[in-house]
Amino acid sequence: MNTRITPGSARRVRTSANVAFTVSGEASEDERLAQRGIVRLRAENPGPLTLSGTNTWIVGGDPAWVIDPGPLLDDHLEDVLGEIGRRGGLGGIALTHDHDDHRESVPVLRQRFPAPLAAGRGEVEMLLADGAFFGPLQALRTPGHAPDHFAFLMGDACFTGDAVLGEGSVFISPDPGALRGYLDALSRLRELGTAVLCPGHGPPIWDPRARLSEYIEHRLDRERLLLDALARGVRSTTDMLDAAWSDVPEVLRPAASVTLAAHLDKLAEEGRLPDGVERPLQ
Ligand SMILES: [Zn+2]
Image (tube, rainbow, N blue to C red; front, side):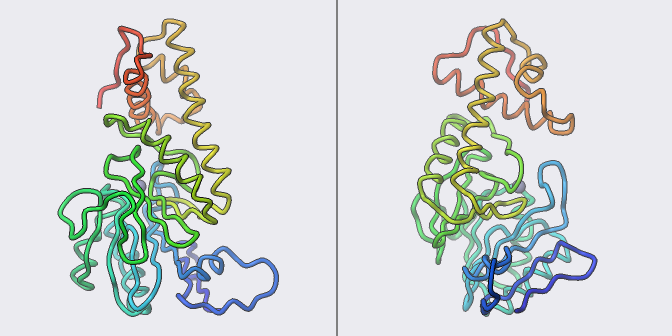
């Protein structure tokens, strides 16, 4: 077995591409990923929105493909470059979305391994469309967290970026149709019947159906709480957050108010938003 964890650091979760699986009994998480040619490299940028750090996922070999190279941190980049080198070079880089913590190291990575970049927007070699293939990855449009957001399907694994996280929920960016599009995307992911979700932050999810149902329920719960508050005459951002996001810690309140705007947009699009509701400032 070639699993190597650097002493004193849980960050480097490395497994070689072609680990022979010979251990009897329950396979470890790294082994189950390795059986699929997948490795998770976690960047050391923990925070309220990045959880334990941004995940870079590397799949396949001769060449390898990278999903979200991550933030520009020396140690992380070294890990990513080393893994690509061991896997026989780089076929391409796929971005789930263009937030900095996912894309920042793209230029430096491409200096070392020139390879096409695929994303939902920006200066790229391949502009993603729903259902399109990029190497072994099939792009699935998953708006919500960002308008350019895509997930990637490979075999029975799905790389979900920030559409589904390893822990907790995500904030929804209030673009037109964002929340409706997000709920549709979650339902669609659930129907795929994948075995594992590989998120942009946090650990892999081995019960995709249950987690996706939780995510959908969570959004609908928030909507119910918000509708109750509106029915009681609540109109201000502060009071709406108190009513429907009371469990959210202070540090995540700005993210909650962004998501509140997306919820209000959905209600407005559906003709269910009463007059005089304060929309959170962006
Ligand atoms: Zn992120």
